[in-house]
Length: 270
Image (cartoon, rainbow, N blue to C red):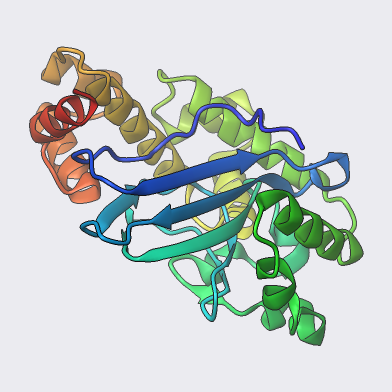
């Protein structure tokens, strides 16, 4: 197993709380890298402690999530994801590359955005025992082994568009100055319309949505680091017409104003 999958992005900070919490991410082996970005596991034990709210910002990825009696395949979730953790529990997931689930589904990913489908909807009766097989393991290595064997057995032919889409999304993540769909299309040798069609089919959301979300991820990282922010300048750098529009979008997605989020994030680290 290779745990080197880079820094987790989009995890919102809250006030520190008692109890045990584990978040592990592991890269797939070579046989699945065309489709899978990484495996992940969240385990918690909050017995005797106050429940904890865990929140993350959306990414343009499909997730296959195993949790006892709740296992589903989740399309791109466009709002922040919130889950109240209490007592003890574990969830294991497969995070597919941007575009990486389309070869399995074979219909536009927009059809499952902000929704979920069962394993049987994609894999048929072969998936009937998969939840039990995965969750019979108590460690992430065992869960990954079961999930890997299953996905290998059901792997579709490689689709070159997946690499193309993944590279486009990686460019959005890495280049904070990229704020316009026209620029994204131009640098990737596509018309704006062709780019939009590709994203609807392979990602499930528009390229504009992906750009906007990662620029807000950038803002969250800067604020969480406790940096003093020049609000109007940051808004312009992230592609906003003015600071008011940036604050509106930030508050809608994160649930707090930029200033309030910075205060909570700094306090959580102290």
